[in-house]
Length: 413
Image (tube, rainbow, N blue to C red):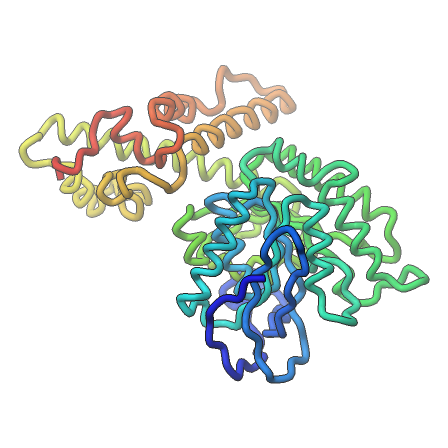
């Protein structure tokens, strides 16, 4: 067991408000409770020093699946408000997350009381570890919420569906929080299931249908609340806890999920009541972003070509931001390598290509259903995809300025 070297003395239980969340929801019971270490014999389970002050309420345990560049930052923010089970099929990803959580704790961050973190390598193990983190004698036998952030629709289906998938496991665990007559023993018997990945709407509908099927067998009320809620803002916003959440689903699901969205978001936008509405909004947003970034890169390249002695990329960015060409890709995220860590890290070009393909394919499916015809419903997106294919997949998508347009040398600025 790893003990994080922090000095947390006389920590008092206090409610943490969800006021950063634009969606109106009840305040979550994020009271700082004592920490409960996992007893795994296979992986270290970091725990934190605890307060000697009596606590009235323990926050519900949260499970998180997918510890990639985005997911690990989201999970770290969640761990500041809830006991957390961090899950990934990659042992390296799990180890990296545990190390980053330890480093944050050693640096005296976050300011709010820390909680236990347990590692897991599978969905099944996630639910086992969640039980280990429960307060002794607590009636909650399931995690209060499970969130996923995965790289593809195939990975999402693998994690969510099937006998050993998240939905079946969550339903089985939540049902153990019911009384002998089937009555609910409290809100903690309900599990909020939140999908944060960028996927096509039909996958979200598939997951929602599977959740509904499980809920049909529960009585008198559903055990599971499903919300598809992709996020926007990139890794920087994920680290800062200021992501925008594009939620799709009924208001009841959004209310159930709201306390678990607050620690990593600055706003929650309810795109619509149907599962998949948030995913549709995310694909449309990323389509616009891809085209926008390519257009800014093209403008910088044109300016350098026409006035090489004066309109350097940096100078042209300054001009764009004072004129009608100003946009997020010029103002908040200009594609200059000296500002983008020489294009290392960030939102990978390969992921942008994936999102453009998802938007194109989703548009084609929708067009066929409506008997509409077009050679392409995303012609500008198709053109942008050509440009992003020129980029190394691991480079930030803003590297389209260097790899397709031949610009972006720091010396030119």
